[in-house]
Image (cartoon, rainbow, N blue to C red; front, side):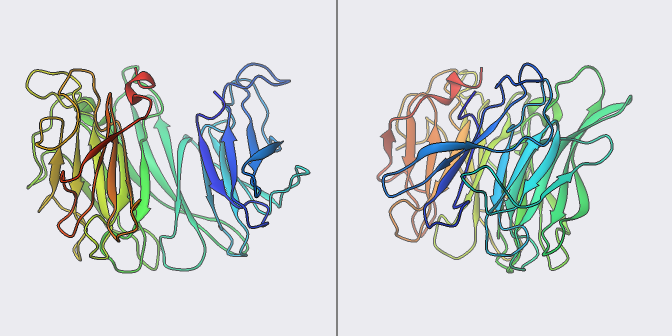
Length: 363
C-alpha cells in the first residue's frame, strides 16, 4: 500500500519540497502490517532517494502511516510531521534529516479513542499549526467518532476540546468511522474553521460538521446535510454526503467555500451516480443559502449519467488558472473540471481530464 497516504513539506529545510509516503501494509520484524513511513527527498531534479522514518511503536497490524499531516506545530520555522501509528498520533519535530534523525517525538493518545485521520491547519490565529485528530470511540453501548483538537505550542502540544461527529448503538458496525476534513476560514474572521465529512452518518445519509475557530480554539459548531435549508435534494440512505470535502474561494470574495461530495446519490434510477454540493462562505459561516449542486445531468457537466459513477467521491477546489477563483475538480468514471468565476463554480468551459476512476479504489 505504498503511496496510499502522502503529505508534502520541506522537511529538511533545503528549499525543496519533500514527500512523506505511508505504507500501512509493510511487514516488519514484529509481523504483518507493521506499516512504515518513507521520506522521499526533493531536489532540483525532483524526488529521489528515501529515508525511513523511525517507528516509535512497532507491532503487528499497527499500520504506521495510516494518515499523515504536516505543519509547524511549535512555531520554530521547521516543518513537523504527524503520523498515525497503532491508533495513536505521533508528532515528529523537524527538521527531519536524511540520516533518519528527527527532533523530539510527542505521542498523543487518550482512553477509549483510536485515531483514524489527521487534519492540520491554523485555528486560533497564532503562528503555530494546530491539529485535529479524528478517532473512533467504542464502548459496550455505542460506537462513535470524535474530533479531538490539539493546540500547537512552542514547548508542548496541548490537548483541547472534542466534538462528537456521529454515534449509533453498537451492533457490530464498522470502525474507521471518521471522514475527510479540512481547515479553512469560512467566515473570514481570521481564525481557521474545521470542516469534517462523515459519510456514514445515519445509515450513510452523511453530514458535514463545521467547528468554527476562535482565539481560544474551536468554539461553536454547525451541521450541514441534504436536509439543510437551501440544499438541493434530500437525505436518503447511502447518499454518502460528505464522502469527500475540499475548501477554496470559488468566487474571489475572500471567503473560503466548501465542496462536498455525495458519491452515493441516486439520480434518475442510477444508483451511486453521485454529485457535488458547493457551499458559499460568508460572515455568518456556511449555510445552504446560495449553495450549488452539480451532477452528470447538470447542463454543461462532461460525461454521461451512469450507475456506479460515484461522481463526487473525490473533490478538490484549486485555483489552477491563477485568476483568483478556485476551480472544482471531481473524480468519477470521467473526471471533470468545473471553473470558478465571480459568481461561483460554473459549467461554462467545463472539461474532462484523465484520472484513475475513484470507484476502482472504493468498492
